[in-house]
Structure formats: C-alpha cells, structure tokens
Image 1 (tube, rainbow, N blue to C red):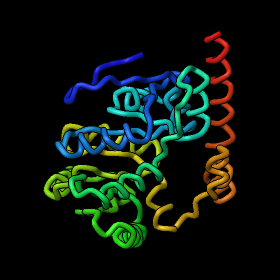
Image 2 (image 1 turned 135 degrees about the horizontal axis):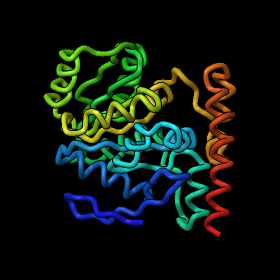
Image 3 (image 1 turned 180 degrees about the vertical axis):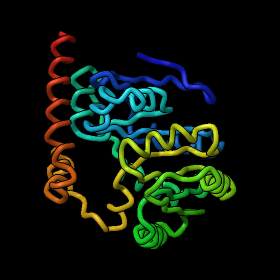
Image 4 (image 1 turned 30 degrees about the horizontal axis):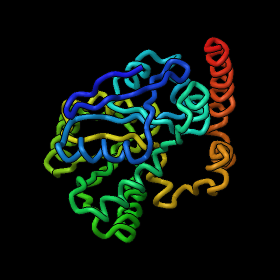
Length: 260
C-alpha cells in the first residue's frame, strides 16, 4: 500500500510484515529523507525494525501504534527484509541501525550541508568513547551534544531541560540508543516537542564505541548477526531470540500462505 508523506510531497511505499508497516526503500532514499527532514528541523521519528520489533507490535498495542505512526520504519534484520522480498519487494535490503548511523556520518563528513547530530542514550562512558571515535573517523561531522539519561523515570523539569537542550543545540538529527521498545516509545512521545529527526538505533552506540563487539561481516550478510549477539549475551537475549524468532517464523509462514 502507499500513503503520502507531507512536506515535501513523497510517495511512501510500505509492506506489511506480520502486521507491521515497513517502508520499501533503499539506503540512498533513507539517507536523503533524513537529510531533508533534518535540514528543515522537522519533528519526526524513524523506527528501525527487526524480527523482535515486529513481533512486539503483535502483543503490545502501544508499540504497534508507535511503529504504525512512525515517519519511516526500516527493515533492520535479515528475516524482515527476507519476508518483504517474498511479499513482492524483490530488491529490499536490510536497512539496519548501526550501518544507517555510520553511513549518515560518512555523508555528513563529506558534505557540509548535512544536519548536525545529537547523541541521546547509552552510558556516559560509552558516549565519551563514541564521540572520540566519531570525531576521529569523521572530523567534519558536527556533533552538537550528547546525553546519557538516568535509569529511572525523569521528572517534568528534567524532561523539559532535555527538550530545550536538544532544540537549543541546533541538531537536525538525534540518534537514540535506549533499546527496543523504550527508544521507540520515547521518540513517539517527543514528536512535536523535539525539533529534529529522531532515529532509534538500539546497540549502535556500543557497537561503534567498541564496548560491544559486532558480528563479523560474513555473519551480518548471512543473517546470523542475531546468533552472534545471543552468544555474547545469552542470559539477557535468549528469550528475545528463541521465543520471538520462533513467533516470527510461524507468523511469517501464515502470512505467506494467506498470500497464496
């Protein structure tokens, strides 16, 4: 199905992945949308959706609404991109958070007119390492702020201070690393308040800082990045991958059968 995105006029094409609407798009289209929205400092948010995310939309009505109403939802995770190809989006690539962030920084380093960035989430130690890494790799990248929120509910004044801090920084793009579904719900709650494109990138801060080792490229390309993460953090992630991946496979098979 298609719907029209306002300002500027763009045809947005999406595919249902076990009920979640995921955008059919390539890397260049995703990056150009972020640049355009960020340059105008439009308040928008982008969900990066893997198998865990789309399964969560089936049992969490609030999260379903968050993904449905996102300005863009990308196919993070090989299973999501695979099902989209099976449903007719034959050239759909995996548009994942860590690579999207890195590709954006690469372009922003190369072209001066790309919007400044703000880093929200992660631990204070991770943010220190991450900023040093990004400034070393991308000396022309404009990082205008970073904030590690506490692991508790924020007061109203703290919320206002964060909003004002981000808006006053001049950032056009806010990279958000809080984990799913917390980061997506945070972004949705702040659309209309934060004058920037918010993008939830999960563990990208830790990957790029090197505090968590990402899977080798061959595992990423083979759809086995989840296995690498599971082996790295089995106690925390076993339920996510064994339970939600099983649910995804069952629902994906049902969707493919109903299609035929």
